[in-house]
Length: 141
Image 1 (tube, rainbow, N blue to C red):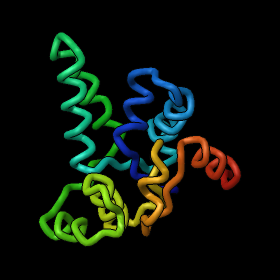
Image 2: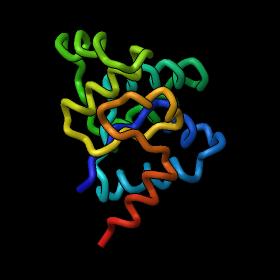
Image 3: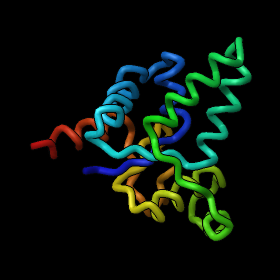
């Protein structure tokens, strides 16, 4: 089974029905159906929670959505070692470097992101949702 770590922007594309919603929804569905093992970094879960609590009222709605997302994706905890390793990553953005380090630690196959340029130096291959879906469909039995 393929393992992916997904960034917050892909989740927000899906949840907020932003451009790219359909592809993000298909990736989400593959994780729901357990055809793909999906992971979130702890910082991604925190960033998503921040956005949901800021934008959705009542707060109970934000909590419900966050709970559903956490039911689908396993969370990769951030250890001090990982936080320090992210400092030395070749990726300039610290949040994205933590996604890369988390992906390495969890031995994921891909990072699924809507922002490929920021993952250009990643040691874990990064794909857009569309690219991931094409790869997944080609490798499916």
